[in-house]
Structures are given as C-alpha cells and as structure tokens.
Length: 373
Image (cartoon, rainbow, N blue to C red; front, top):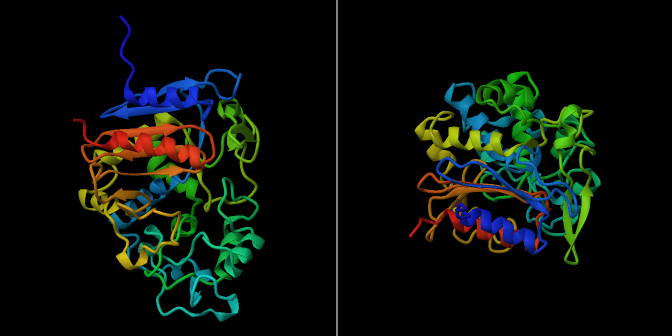
C-alpha cells in the first residue's frame, strides 16, 4: 500500500504540473524531512534533495540571530548607535518626503541604532517609487539583487552612506538594505567577514556544512539554474553550476546573502525554535511585531503588505487571523519558511524568481501554518 502524500507535497506537485516551477523541495511538520519533486529545469535531471540553493532574503533571520547572540553576550546592544562601527552613517541626512530632490535632505535628528537595522526602520532600503532617490540608488549600484558583488562591502557602504534616508530612523519601514548594513556591522565588530563569523558562531556548530556566501567549485554541480516567469513561460536567468555564486567572490560580501540546502536550513530552524540559539526572551523578541504603527506606511513595500502582518528581527510576523503567531520570511528566488504558533516548521525551496504566480504559491504554502482542524 502506498503512503498518502502530504498536503505540502501535493502543493508542490500541483505547482510543477501547472508549469509554475520545474521542481523543488518542500518540508512540513514538527520535525520534517525534505521531499524533492520535479526537475531542476524543464526536461532536465530530477531535482536533488541535497541541492545548494539561492536563499537570498532567508539570510536575514540568520544575520538577526547572530546579532541577538552578540547582544546576549554583552558585545552589542539594541540601542547602540551604529556610527561607532560604521562612520559612513555617522551623519545621516533625511529627505522631507520620499520623492524629494536629494539636495532637499537635512541632517537627521536621530542616530541609526542596531535595533533600527534589525527592524528595517533605519530609513535605508528599497526606494519603492520612481524619483531622485531611486535613480541615484540605481546609478550607484545599490539596488537590491541576487548577488550585490559589483561593489565590495566597504565601497558599497560608502556609496549608500552618501545618499539620504527616506525618513527619520524609527519612523519609516523600508526593506532590504538595513540587513546588508547589519552584516557589515557584524564584520567590523568581530574583525571577521560576516561569513567567517557566521561559520564560527552558527554554521559549523550546527553542522550547516553547505551554507555560505558562495558555492565551492567542487560542489558547483549541486547548484540548479534559476528562472523567471515571462509571459507564462519559464526563462533561465542564472545557469546551473555557473555564475556569480560559484567560487569565492572577488570582494568582501558581508553585505550579501547566502546559499544553503534544505537539510542545513531545517537544522537552523529546529535549533532556533527549540531554544538552542537564543534565550526565550530574545526568541520572543525576534518573533514579535516591533514596527510602530505609524511606520507601517502604504508605500513601505508591496500593496497590502501590512494587512495582518508585522515585522520582528529579520522575519515577518502574522498579527491576526487563524495563522496568528506564525513567523517566517521568503527569498527572491521562490524560497520560503515559517514556524507556526504550535512549532510546526514549513520550508519551500524552488528557484523561480518571485512574481505574481510565485506569490500565489507562497500564499498557499503559508496557509499550511494555520492550526489543523
């Protein structure tokens, strides 16, 4: 007799049949094992369960945990101004409104703190509307992307520090760049690259041997291609086993993001959920909505983002409805995780760029975090 297929696996299989993704990995349960389905590319080999994948913004919670561990050890504080490690941000200027000319910026009345970085309320982040700041960020190579390696960490921060904030620290929420800055802060504080610090403090102790800032050349065969959906069809945007993520990067990428495997990331999530990595106090902080209501503006991110959602330390937090208490986050190439209020873990790993279709799949996956009836 065959074993019944779980709802999570059926969800992934349905997305594969619909042509939304060629394949991927999914896990769901109290102590789940990853299940691979489909192929790495249309007509390609089967999708391996040990694939090394671009997790992109799922890096943020790892950086957040590393930061909170330093706070627990007394080496850092939530209210510490970042300027003592990041002089590039010692005298930030603030635009009077997001679309104002850059020359209209005035000195900030509030220093950027570690908490502002953890909660994405530093005033740094994606410029969500076309205007002078958005154009200046694009011209300086500061747009969010899968591998921001055209600039090394110091050069990248110098360029970012030369542009104004979109609002006073603590008063606005903007995505992404705060965590790039936080990675550089941890690097300077510890005297190591971010990856070196993560490896010593988290990755090696947890046995996360395939997680890092790049795929070693000897393991390049485990990196599948990445795709984008254009006009309903999958188009390759990064090749299998090649590209900017294979081999050591040419610069310090402490402002960058990680690659990982299902096994590694599940180990991290179990350790985090079970209190191996943080005290109960700091785990609760990580999974609490820390963003003031006034900072949750309609132009913060995509439309409807704040509906029933808050933000903790590197994770979104469900603040209402049947999924209340669940927390987690996604990566731009179709990766997502959650830890539900009852401790259930969910992990979805595909390699198709986020768009309308993928957001629908993620929404369905997130509904698995609702209590079983």
